[in-house]
Image (cartoon, rainbow, N blue to C red; front, side, top):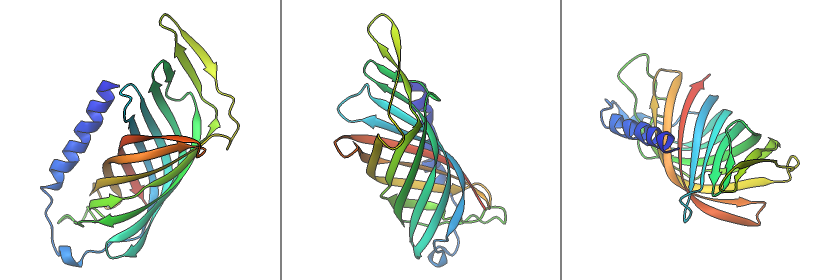
Length: 215
């Protein structure tokens, strides 16, 4: 997981550095546009106060970004995910469960940019601040491993669909970069509070990296 975290942080750093070399034109006239498409994303959570707790989600989704004002949008998505989770003696391997999720995220764009190239459209490229709200539940319950200090025991969860729901609200700062007039990459970092059936919850640091195609 250290290698995964290092790769993720490196990609975010590359995005941040590259954003400083963008060539802008008519910045004041650029406005947020409504977009829709499909994306793949990795969403990673590090629980505060428990350095051994890490959760990495791999997601595939449909998204729609609705323009609300010149620099304000509402980003909405829904799709499927699977996860890797490590918390103390419990390990949940990637692809051992399948979940569904949906989310909404009000965004304010701090800057908008467009490359001086016919092949690279704006696609709402630039820095933004977002407040993501998400809900997810398992379709196929997870199988996980418990380590007793010597061996791993496999255990199957018996939660029914909709019985165990995670809700989260966060605050992110992110950057989107258009690769072509249809394809963009986006990275975001921030913090989030996640609760389980509104009974208990935890604070996390989180980071996300997304590749999306618009149509």
